[in-house]
Length: 283
Image 1 (cartoon, rainbow, N blue to C red):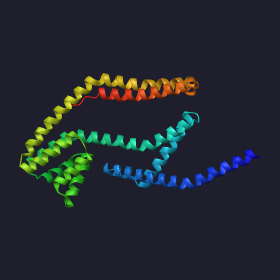
Image 2: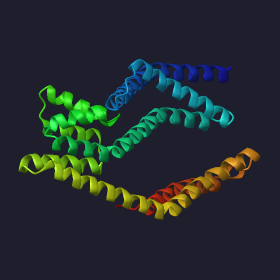
Image 3: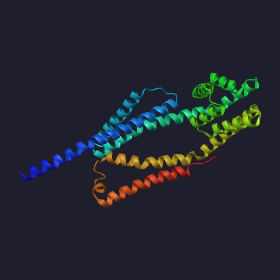
Image 4: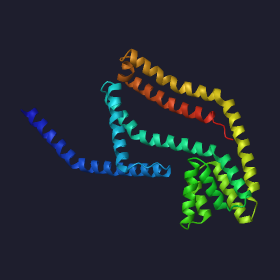
């Protein structure tokens, strides 16, 4: 009887505490999720992708549920699998948007040489700089046409061309774009010949791309070795767990084994970081 009464008291106390804390936790989660949805919506708007916020919210929730279920089944109902799946579901939308932004930026950078040639030809034909931008926006495909159309609309709404170029620099951060915008701004202040400047920029960018290609070719072996060494421990752990689910029981149940696993994971992360640093060559 005493045990039952004690259990009821503990259960009631836990229930009351949860009832008091739950609304606060739900409010914080709702606030955090609303902030994440707004940030995702802003990033998509900057990339000229129009998706309603309600659909973004559904995608976030679906990502968390699907990844949580996958983690549950992959680790056979283990709590760690569920937590890991939920964490992956929270990060997945941000990772997907980041990958899309990188691909869009890479495509934009690949269009810069053609865009500079169009600008140079337009200026040779006697057009003004804004008219050259309009010709560029008409002839080039997305994403360059999208970015310069936005620049043109900003200018028509009364924003100065220098500010428009600075906004473009913030949206499309790259060394080549910084070089082009800086050259345009300097030429406008000093009265330089933009046609000659654009020709020199085309030559500079092409030579830089050739050098980057050579660097990638020379470092491909190191990068492949880093990739293999990074995936090998994960592949071995997955294979061992698949063939024998109790393979790691000795390590997981013993304190020394748990310490060694934690040490191995930390060392693995540090090793990946060092491989990435040493295989990266700045040009």
